[in-house]
Length: 340
Image (cartoon, one colour):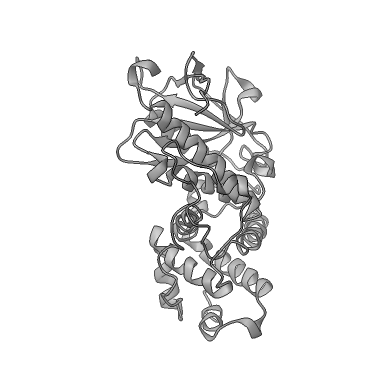
């Protein structure tokens, strides 16, 4: 294995302080959170040391440490563990663009001022990962330090855990739309894990909701909503396979296991039109409410009142993707559901 040259960075604030800062973004004004904004935090920048994670575009890796600690003292992550996280993110990033046809987050208007995606490794046994949705920097670094951030626990071993790719998928979602309802965001992110994992995921044989009550039950879910998405994707395209460039298909972890297990998943061709429909509906909500396009308060991003807008976008995407004569009876009944 090629020996990597690592650079080490440490965050000089503890994780709870990061969360506190993030909550202030959610409460800030729409004007402050308009497209392309980079918010400066009143914190110290990460300090590069001599030996940590390599910088592999578009990602930069830092180790997040507590007050009074150095990165060397924490020994949060081994070199092989970190390299596996890097390899998984590189492959997932390629799949989201080459297989799903999505645009890279840093190329989207919302993240126009971000220069890189920061992957912060932190000590946590309760949360494996977290994706932030704002572009931030520190006052000392200024615009040169603008980035979007995702956290990965030091308990994650990427050769047997898809958390890094899952959190990266959230960044793709956030770059297209402001909707963060769990049945949409977590349900689809859970589905995305099937791109790397063995099999097509759970739920392919479970029927779609056939009335409003069943649909609203799904909309109250989080990760389990993936079952509905997988069933829907199967009815839209029952091949359940995707093609990937040979160099990506051959990528392996440090234990020599392949990263893309079997190239099986439903719905890969539908994700882009779905995201584009959701992006258009998200922009329509902004205009209707008089909000900046990317300036929704956090509570509005997660507000179940927007489920109707998500539903309208989903139905529009399906109708544009599959002709009525190609739709099954089950799918047609699903599409007839109306939300107030």
